[in-house]
Length: 318
Image 1 (tube, rainbow, N blue to C red):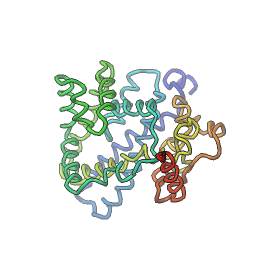
Image 2 (image 1 turned 45 degrees about the vertical axis):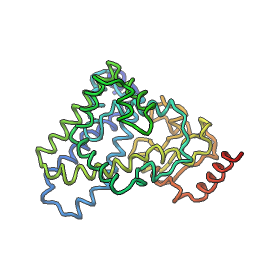
Image 3 (image 1 turned 90 degrees about the vertical axis):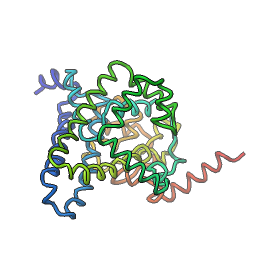
Image 4 (image 1 turned 60 degrees about the vertical axis):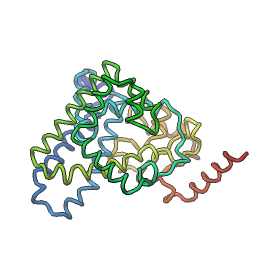
């Protein structure tokens, strides 16, 4: 077993637990597609929180793989990344954005969760957003982006891809165009597209009338991930207080220690199994949350929200 760890696994043989998320999630979706026609509406609705939990598992496992690639053998890391890409989103572009997130200082204490989730948009804008997501689920967005990057200047593509923050988008796209990154992104996109094609072949009605709307719902909630992991941070300028941790045993088992977020931001390159050891090095006056990061909001912590409003008013006062 020790030889296996030294020859195959770079950090720990327990990383195989993260990898098992891939066949498990693929199997769940494949079975849902196969039995879709015979399942009741109640059962289909009941599966939504299960699929959300699986999405969190995928996020935690991929997050760990990005920061500490599990294998010493390159092609095994490539296959693992493609596996994580299949059921969620192509991981290379996502991982580039996540790397920028670590390198860029940003406070979430003055942000609105409704705005972050896109819920302040008009009904018409919401419908347009869902319509565009349907085309995205067919690969139109990603294939169009690859074509435009070949013929348009990066700055022009960045404005189209992210009109709210074209500078940040241009930074991400420049990284994406690096030969190794672009090749990896194409592999991820192939895995992502193949998985959706298989679901469509198994049952096209499942794909269009269940998979797409449920994925849109999950993705909308997942848009708030950075917010939930950083809102209420005691001091956004302090590397020991700029994030929010959740120490729920169940949540951390589900997400492979994604709850140890302050610890992770303090030392991003540390293996996920060692993050709990860092807690004792952090100050005890940090803002933390119980049960899940997704409870971290002004609604659940009104006193913290009130305190932040006072701090924001003080910051803008002459």
